[in-house]
Image (cartoon, rainbow, N blue to C red; front, top):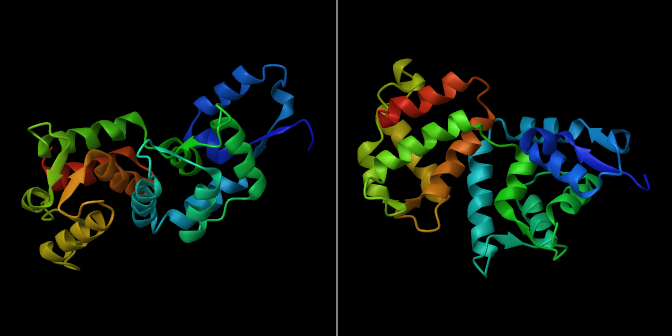
Length: 223
């Protein structure tokens, strides 16, 4: 493998711009010098399909807690520890290759939101627009955070599929949502935009159709 840069499909699907960065930094490599590994992304997305929300929100909270400098950057050792804590397996070679691309300053520090997007993928802009719309409706004063009591007041579970099917009550769905969201917040009494986005980023992993995802936002928030 000497002389090759390994680029996993998880990186390609999650952050297409990384491929551009790769060729920008090492234009002499040529396309035939870049290897694509198809297994990592599939393994991670399959393992996350049923626990994506808790993993993504949990990782976000974990990263913010260990980021003592509050600058959004963490070391490779911190990322490896996080993957262990959340029982996520990324092949060592793939992780090293990802790090080679993301750590362009060679300071052994990488933006943890960029790392998360590269490993797990990212919501497309269409979905993000509706997440922003929902949050802006909640944060009408543009303070950058929303009290949890306001989240509770505004969230409506009346049209949730499990409620419509008679398998859960509105209060059960609302309580489950608030519990999961609250666990991901640094301050359990308020929700920042990044924490709100993390919740829907995790939810997005298991929903293939854009319209299905958008309806999940439209119904409870009335947007």
